[in-house]
Structures are given as structure tokens and as C-alpha cells.
Image 1: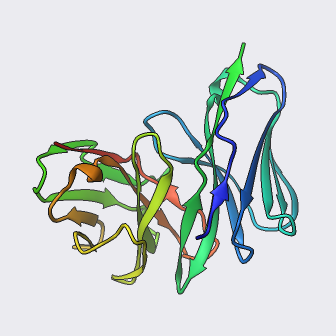
Image 2: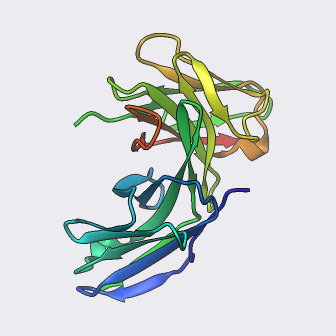
Length: 113
Length: 114
């Protein structure tokens, strides 16, 4: 059973601080990794994608991937109250010509003013 | 910016009834997906669809479920005889390619089976 594991939280971070979200995955053959943000009652919204080991930065967000450790993380700098949401780690498993995403259960992030 | 759309936003049905959930993927996308999320639980893959056929399906996607692309724009999920446990948010997603491509999610249809 291919799994994606996340700490469910809630993770409480003061406004302006760095929020650090972590994720591990079980399928060593996974190739694509995503962070989605989900507000309550809404659909997942893509924040970042990462495919290679190392860091990838986009604005206030940095994704980090370590395939040897099967570990993905997301850093959010200068956290804002609007960042309060559930963050879903997702991993692509590839079958034939299409692929499915396996989601973690999400980490609830709360930014306190 | 192009987006995936879904109708209806909410659907209430009686157990045993058939429901059809509709999706319009992003126009140049070739791969289509359905996911569901039971309240308080994780998002779960149901099925992927490419070139007018199912590419992959999960164990959740049993004979009660079917998908169809009836025309050039719509992508539907049919549940033949709904059960109480089918109550969930159903998300449609699409991507340009299948492998390593970002999947863009629609707003979802909240299905309640009574």
C-alpha cells in the first residue's frame, strides 16, 4: 500500500514567522511531488511542484525534496493569516499513460496574529 | 485563467438513486480524473481517463461507478445506485499530460446520500 504521511497538526505559527511542513512517502519509485493548499470546504489548490532533489523556491514558498530519505517539505516564509489552511502533500504514482496522485491526510496550519 | 468547472455544486439524493456528476476540464487538457473526499478524511483517487478509456482505477471505483466523456467538453461520473457511504465531496481534475504533470482541481460537488 503506497502511503503519504503527514503530521495532522494543528501547527500554530506566529504571523511573520516561518512555517515548516513535512511529509514522507513510501513508494521509492515516486517521481513527482506536490504541495496543495486546501481551505475548509474547498478544492485542493496547487502551491508547488518538485521533481528533483534539492530546493525549489517560489515567492514565499520553498519546497525541499530528498528522495534518498523519501522526504518532502514545504517552508512558508513571512507567514500570513491567509496562509491558515490544510496543506496536502501529494505524490504522483505512474501507471501506463496516466498517473494518479496519492494524497497525505494534510497538516492544518494556523497563523496567529 | 482557464479552470475546471463542476456541476452541480451540491447534490442531495436518496439511497439507491443514480446520480451523475458533471465536469468540464480545461480545454487543452487530455487527462481527466475523479477524486473524492469524505468529510474529515484524505482526498482519494477514484479513476483516471485518457483517450476515451479508463487508464487506472482504485478499489473504490467498483461496478457502481462509471465515467464517460459524452462530448468534446464534458466528463461525467455516474454512481448507479448510491449508498450512504458515497456521501463525500467529489473533485474532478485534469492535466495536459499524464506523467509528471500538475493536476488542476475543480471546485467539487458535495454529494449527500440520505
